[in-house]
Length: 423
Image (cartoon, rainbow, N blue to C red; front, top):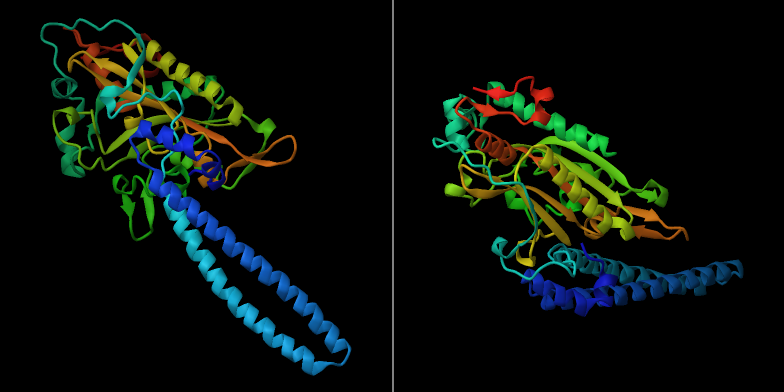
């Protein structure tokens, strides 16, 4: 959430940057500034009445001391009128505050100046590519057919138990899934991240804190009786660990990693691009989160991107890094890099990670702050990244490593799986 003071000071820059998102923000920004003016005017009236009330209270006390009870009672009537007027102003102030907050929740983050202009994922900018596209055997098949051939993943059984998008992993692929999770966690811990196991459900405050609410409300599973939401990613509960926290500059960087199942309704997702593991309602992911000093957050973003690149290199997967254009940028992000791996059997690139800098956008919602050297309270910057999301990584590993003898396991994972071939 943007700060009103920042909006007022940088209005033209913000509106210009919003063009990268194809977001016409002039009307709502002007509404926000008008409401902020109204809020300040109302507050000034309240402050003035409070000062007048305090002054009258002193007069009443003095008059009673002097035995001038009648005059004191006359002034007391004035204080009653002031109190009633003040209550009206407080109600007006609360109404203005609610309207202002509602509008601020509708405004996306300001894209970084290096975010490319664009309308959709077709306009994202490829900035790095590594690895050779594998040449598959003649009878190569996509992962959903491999799953049937080797009895690895039962999509139909998942439909029976829950519904589409909830597969059942079996045998060696279940162990491979567990191996990937352990490998990703171990790599993050080696890089200085502290492992946490957060809750899989969040309350409304947590959803608003990281920006899933109200923007992505329809994409989350909501338990109406308890008013709780299933997490769409570990980013949400991990980042909310620092909601309403004031830290010291010496605390930076704060680095956490967590593995969780993730739950997304994926409403409106249909067609051939969502077959098999390509798009699920429940999937596993290892997430890295950093809370950082504002002056170092973009340096940290680059480090986090390198961490994910290192994982893909060790898995021996061909991959590329994309800088997201404004039209494909998430609501809360100022700058995002996506990592994609190449699926040889499907002959296309699959997104497996997003690494983002939210700057102070989430921190302002979370009231996550630090005290600088002067003792002044400032907002932190928050960052997160998938390291990594498992379904499409698993799909690419199964497809790219299929041979006539079976599916080869990357060398780095063999100590975790205990086997080198699925057959």
